[in-house]
Length: 72
Image (cartoon, rainbow, N blue to C red; front, side, top):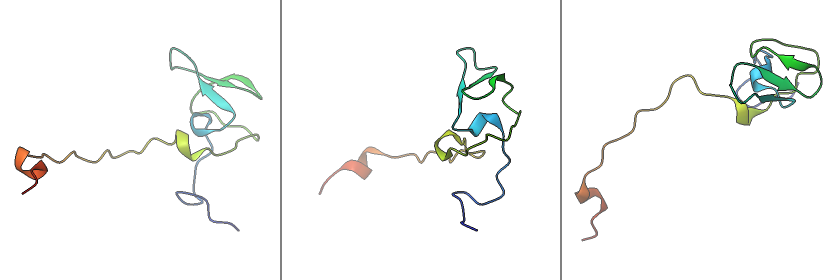
């Protein structure tokens, strides 16, 4: 079995499916195959799209000073 990006234990939900697009209000997914779906719904036509995946933990931004960008 081929190892998928971010592991093989991906829960198939419409929110990260390649067939679905988020609506303008962001509450529903507009699926090319099934029509209007809830973001946590699933179907047999699920195809994983790694670019739709939203990381749960956002990294903290580092603080930089002006001295960090100075060339000496």
